[in-house]
Amino acid sequence: MNFKALIIYEDQDTLEYLEAALGPTCDVHVALTLRDADERLKQSKFDLVLIDIEMNDQSTLGFAENIRRRPSRPVVIVTSAKDTLDNRIASLQAADEFLPLTLSSEELRLRFFSCLRAESKFRKHLSFLRLNHERQSAVVRDLNDMQMEMSFTRIEFRILSYLVSATPAVVTRNDIKLAVWGAEVTSSRTLEVHLCTLRKKFAGTRVKIESAYGVGYYLMENMIDHSSEAA
Image 1 (cartoon, rainbow, N blue to C red):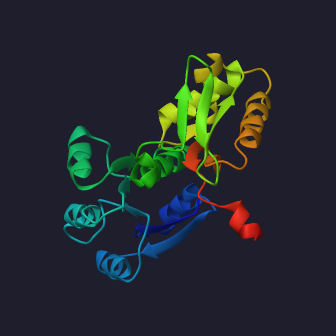
Image 2: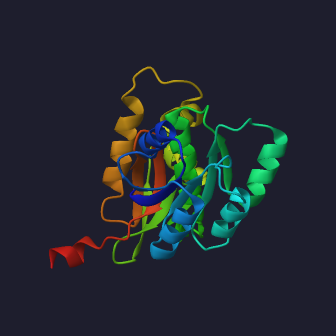
Image 3: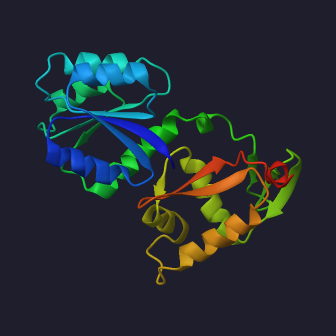
């Protein structure tokens, strides 16, 4: 998932940690003060904003709340401040998520992606995919928007059903394994083999199983018309 993020932070070590957590597919911009952040927000559109509530500037929460009012721009407070109920309540009134810096970089990345997916257009009705649990199949749309029915094996359908139920969130490999098999699978390649098969089946359709770097997978609509590209 390629996206653009603004980090509003003063501490250099924390900035580097957050950049690493966002992953290589993120175009990261940094603001050291709220005034600098305000200028950057006026000049460019960001998909995600990370901010600390302990910056020296005043009215940090008010600033975060103002950003949040703008459409399609989730705000996440990532802070070393003590994770108390009062801090969470105050922060979540101004932001979409409150994350302590004690979380691992993988967990932070997962939560960042989840915020992005929650704000995306994909949150709308899945018009390109409709599951039929009785037939263990799905009606999908191809790139010409023609409907077609696909059948799946029991495991493939379980994986697909879980991805659909989790949408728009990113789900980890372990989450899928637990939902489908009820425990860790013996072979680390088992899930990847099934996902590879599903991706091949969905080739040429509007359904796409996308990877979130270093985190897991999510379902999205494939908007690319390969036929027009070939022409």
